[in-house]
Image 1 (cartoon, rainbow, N blue to C red):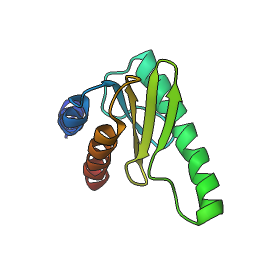
Image 2 (cartoon, rainbow, N blue to C red):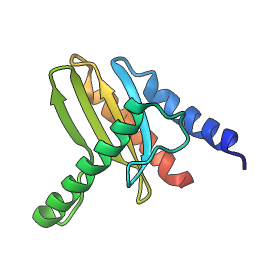
Image 3 (spheres, one colour):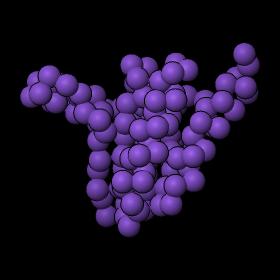
Image 4 (cartoon, rainbow, N blue to C red):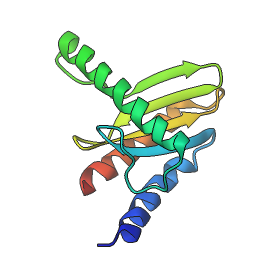
Length: 121
């Protein structure tokens, strides 16, 4: 399968998440923070890399406390919200949303999208 076809598959899976109200930016990356199937921009590259670090740190902490990993990590900042979630053992999805975005809707779609990505990786 060519890179263009693979990128198209990921883009179609991410489309539902991109269409949720308040979503500004999405990055699909591997667990080391390198982008998967997307045209790279500096912003997306940074988002994937930093989200991988956040998620890895949260996994270490929660595994020590509860013997289970986090469902997702949320960072609330002045300009909006960052939500990162694992998409299986090989990938993660990061979302930057507007400050007033409905996180319940975003997390619901993020969870569904992560399951789809997990199945194909």
